[in-house]
Amino acid sequence: MTILLSTLNARYAHASLGLRYLMANAGELREQMELHEFVIGTKTTEIVEKLLARRAPTGTTILGFGVYIWNVEETTRVVALIKRIAPEIVIVLGGPEVSYESAGQPIVEAADYLITGWGDVTFPELCRAILDGAPPTQKIIAGRQPPMAEIALPYNEYSATDLAQRTLYVEASRGCPFKCEFCLSALDKTAWPFALDRFLGELESLHARGARLFKFVDRTFNLNIKSSLRILQFFLDKLEAAPNDPVFAHFELVPDHLPEALKESIVKFPPGTLQFEIGIQSFNPDVQTLVSRRQNDAKAEENIRWLMTQSTAHLHVDLIAGLPGEDVESFARGFDRLVALGPHEIQFGILKRLRGTPIIRHTETYGLIFDPYPPYTILATDRIDFAEMQRLVRFARYWDLVANSGRFGHTLPLILGDTPFARFMTFADWLYSETDATHRIALHRLAGLVSQWLCLDGYDEATVTAVIARDYAGQGRRTPEEKAAVREQYLAAPQRQARHMDA
Ligand code: SF4
Image 1 (cartoon, rainbow, N blue to C red):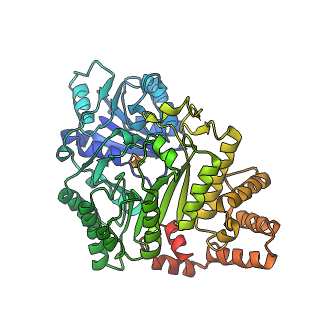
Image 2: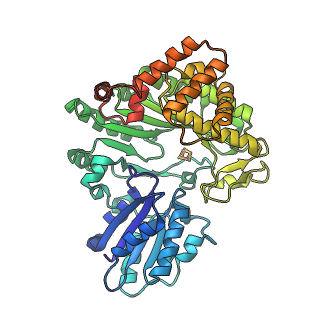
Image 3: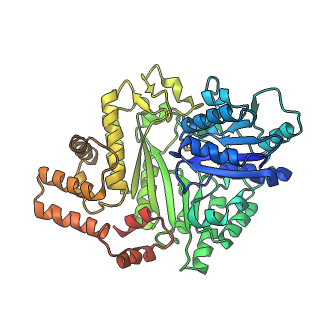
C-alpha cells in the first residue's frame, strides 16, 4: 500500500474516528490507503513489523500516525524504529498531542511532516504533493479548516467488525464555544455543526448496517436544542420501531442548560438506552472564574437532580482535582455535593496539562507543578502538596474500582456514611496500607477488604456480610442464566451501565 494510516488506541473497543475522516476525504487516493489500528501496550517491534509488511513494494510509502496524549510515548518509539529500519518511508504526524508546542518533541523531530489542527483535507493534499514528487519544503503544515460541507463524513469507513465489536464514535458538530482553560476545546472559541440532515442520513445507514451503540464526541450536545431534539428523536424512533433491538446513545452535556423541550424528549427514553456525561469539574465559583469556566451551579445541581429522579438516563459526572485555587477541603465539599445528587458514576479526574491549553498562565501564581511526561498530570499546587496529591490519585483509582464499577452498590452507602469524601479517603488510605497496590486487586479480594474495613469501622459482622453478599451475589456469583436475565433487561447498555441500573 502506498499510504498507511495508523494509531494506537487506548482500548480495542475505541475505533479511531480521526483516521477514518482521513480515509473518507482521500478521494482518488483512498484505494491506495489502508488503516492499521493497534492497542497501547502492544510490543513496538510487533507494530513495526506489521506496518512494514504492508509498505509499497516499490516507490514511495507514506505512513500517517494519529498522535494523542495516551499514545505519544509508544508512537515515538514506533516512529524511531521505523526511521532506523526503513528511513525512506515518509512519516506524517497529526493529532492533538503534536498540534501545539511541537518544538523539541522527539516524535516531531523524527518524523518528516507534521499537520497541525484539522487534517481532513490537508492530509490528502500533502500525500498528493509527496506522491507527485513535489513535496512541501516546510515540515510543519497548518491544517486547513474547510467549510463543514466540504468534509466527507467517515461513517462508511466503519467495518462490519467495528459495528459488531466496537464503540462507534460519531459527531454532529466540532468545537466548543466555552473557554475552560484546562481543555483543548477552549481554543476553538466556537462550535461548527455538520448539516443535520446529512448527519442523520449517516446515522440511518449505520443503524441499517447493525450499529446499536453510538457515542457522540460533540463537546456540548445540548448547545443547539433544535438539533439535540432531532437527534434524540432519531433514537426514539428507532426504539419505538424495534423495542427488542434497542440502541444506546451517549452524549456530553453542559449541566446548566436543560430546557423543558429537551427534558420532554429525555423522559421518553427507556432504561438502558441513554447516557450523559456531564462536566461539573469544580463547584467552587472562585476556581471556576480562575479557569474561565462559566457555570450556574444551582441550575446544574437542579438539572442533575431532575435527570436522576425523572429520567432513566445513566449519568457520568466529571470532577477535576488539582485545579488552581482549589484545596482539598474545597474539592471535598464539591465531591460531597455531587455524591448527594446520586449520579451513577463520578469521574474523579486529576488535572492534566494538555499541550496548548491556557491553564499554564496560572503556573507561577498557584505553584502548579506538572509531570513533564505524558499525560502531564499535576503533581502539586500551592494548596495540595505532592503527598496529598498522591492520596487523591489513589482515591480516584479506588473510587473507580469500588463505586464506579457498580460492583458494590449496596455496600457503598455504608462506606460513605454522611461524609463521603472524608470516609472514602480514610478507606482509600487503609486499602493502600493493606495492599500497597492500586491495580490488580481481584474482585474477590477487594470484597474481603471492603468487608474487613467496614468491620474495623464498627459495623457488626452480620450486617457487613449480608450487604456484601447482596452485592457480591448480585455480580460474581450469578449463574449464567441470571446474568443473561440482567442483560436482557438492559439490552443495549454496556455491562457497567447495566450493573448500575440493576443495583
Ligand atoms: S470543558 Fe467542556 S465546556 Fe469547557 S471548553 Fe472543554 S469542552 Fe467546552
